[in-house]
Length: 289
Ligand code: TA6
Image 1 (cartoon, rainbow, N blue to C red):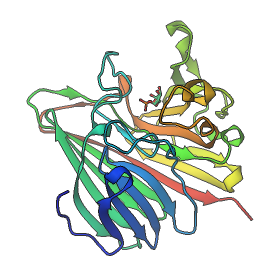
Image 2 (image 1 turned 90 degrees about the horizontal axis):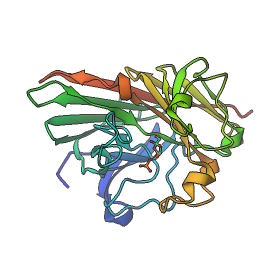
Image 3 (image 1 turned 45 degrees about the horizontal axis):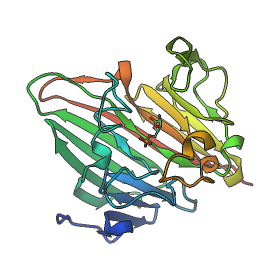
């Protein structure tokens, strides 16, 4: 682990499985970020409760992506534009990232900057932990040819009961349904709010802000973004969580992925020496009396 100056509200040391982890415990919020994949596995804003789902069966030995948290899918999403990307969701979520800077913010939070370079691509990831969680991902093409890159923050949100949650902001958006029986049936348009009572795996053409109601936790989670024209919604339900060794059978009702990124036809092409960036901002509104 390289040396980086830390404020008193942060610590860098071994976490689960001995994996290097940045622990943040600041007045405005607390978080955990594993350097493996730069995966943020926990965020608790001041006075609130855990916003991020991480499976209790997640593997923390560096061999695979952490099941839960906010893995970064990069430079491919899923099997990629050509359908043959290996590893699935790209190398960034299983790469060791380097902490570059950790500092206090003026509003009682902590800002951390992490980076990774591979294959003529440099990724800079800025995570600002406070009462809101601000994620900024910036990609620079270090090669000498234009490069098309997919990117997504695969955000696993913790909800009390996903069947009681309403996911709003996608009405009227077109989407590709990964669970459709045929390619002809995959292209659809969202009618109203998204409710989950069966497996859902959809890529929406939508840059709109999303809200996720979580009545059991008496809160609404807001997902806002900049320069992220794709929104992915995923819940494996029992059907697809049962085969996952790193997710417990009773966990699927307590999570939903609302992912922000630029994938498939929205993937940016970055010129040599140029950069592209996106931002994701999570905040929580308490709805209890
Ligand atoms: O974002 C949705 C998705 O691409 C789904 O298709 C589902 O497979 C999920 O990600 C999890 O992928 P993983 O490789 O982490 O098992």
